[in-house]
Image (cartoon, rainbow over all chains, first blue to last red; front, side, top):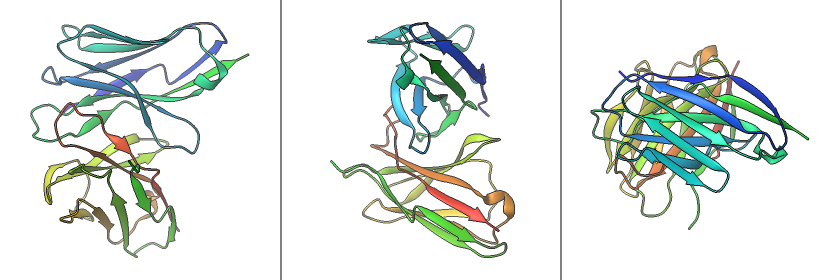
Length: 114
Length: 113
């Protein structure tokens, strides 16, 4: 079955720096890769996603890149702000399944200090 | 549109008991997925229901079960609770297509004593 590895598990940056979180997946048939942000005590919220026919996608300070050959995808946050502090989860669609199951990485705790 | 709602929000049970959690999806969404979130294992997929049928199942024991009603509301049941079942149980709803965004509910925090 699908397996998603996420690194690093914790990341501390200064306000204004960039942050990069990397994920690898095992099943080459996966074709949908969302990223969720979860603040303390809150529900996971989608921040950006990418589909396998696209190599990069940007939304203001957030970008995601996908390398299907290497089976990895990354989240890039530029000009980080204290409100970016949260746990970030990458996920991959569970390939060869009819449904919408997502397999998640174990999360990255991002701390942005001012 | 109202978001995904889950009830109850908090629950305390003892080992051996059973529990039922409820999830109401966003209006018009036909797919409901359930996930277990723990500090050690992160978010793990339990199962997905679509149009009252279980469409996918994760790697959890048979003590975990679910169902979906005709209005798309879903319930999950855990029988013979174990201490290790203590977790945040999240449901997520979507329209049902593979690449559609899943929207999460606030979760039910279950503590098993």
